[in-house]
Amino acid sequence: MKKELLQAIDEEQFDSVVLYRLPYQTDNQIIIGNSEKIYNGINMHHCMDNGFVIEPFDNTKSYGLFINNLFSASFQQLSEAHTHKLTPHFSISSEESFLFEDDYDSYERSFEQMHQAIKSGKIDKVILSRIKCGPGVKHEQIIPLYNALEQKYPHAFVYVFSSPFSGTWIGAGPELLLQQRNNKLSTVSLAGTIPNSPGHSWSPKEYDEQEMVTNYIEHVLIHHQVDKIEYGHAETIDAGQVKHLCTTFNFEFEKLNGNQIGLLYDLHPTPAVCGMPKEESYQLILNTESHQRQFYSGFLGPVNNGHYQFYVNIRCMQVLQSKTALFVGGGLTKDSECKKEWHETELKAQTLLSVLKNI
Image 1 (cartoon, rainbow, N blue to C red):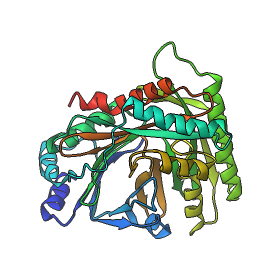
Image 2 (image 1 turned 60 degrees about the vertical axis):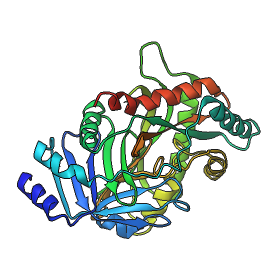
Image 3 (image 1 turned 60 degrees about the horizontal axis):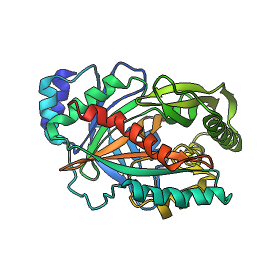
């Protein structure tokens, strides 16, 4: 791999770079290629291609990306020579006009607007997100930051991608949206969040939230007439400074072609990043939040000839010239309290901030 990768970088026939590591895997992956914008969502042609998909939260206002695979390889750790050669190819965006960083007062106003919709009975759950700014990251710190994240969070899908259209994004999240391997598919229902520390245990609020999402996923799968649905009890998964309840679904889906895309977009955006009912919470988010989510709470992952693994982009940040923009959110229900929800987003931000401060 060493000589071939250096040769591929030297040929400079690419404009985009992806590094990623799947949950609980030891090997990292690199893809270099060229990116194209995707409007109004991906299709089955993208899933049958070979490369990497990045889809935004709202594809009516933001474009997605497809990075084709000109060269790819597995690696344990990039050598100094590879790191030195790759570093100049990471694009850092200078566009900071989208940036709206909530202070507590502005967050509280958004919370009250969303909570009122829940108390009125229009919505059961909605996710309120915010941007928290962190320290800047220099070009030469991007790969060390990725290395630190993939070492610290073995449970997560860890990635960094860079294209001239998007700049550089980095993330580490545990939520599988949809995986397809030889007609065997998987997804998860992820809900409920508490601090990942002694003395904190699950309450009825988190279990109710998890059951709500699990029932929703089951309804979507039944609607799409999938076969042999299997799922068990909710398990606790670590996610850095917090932990979640997670139920894994395994099933089969013989009807290929466009039907998998329909299932994908019935699952996306998931209740963990949007809310329930889906359309009402989606519109409330668009009408309430003061920032554009962009790729936060979208999905991303590798595709290879009909096999794909898409993860929800829930712990992520964009690298800007003078700072980083960290995107974090939390699910609001009728029992939510503003100060607790704000504290939860602060904890979630530490997933990335704790690593940022040490590179």
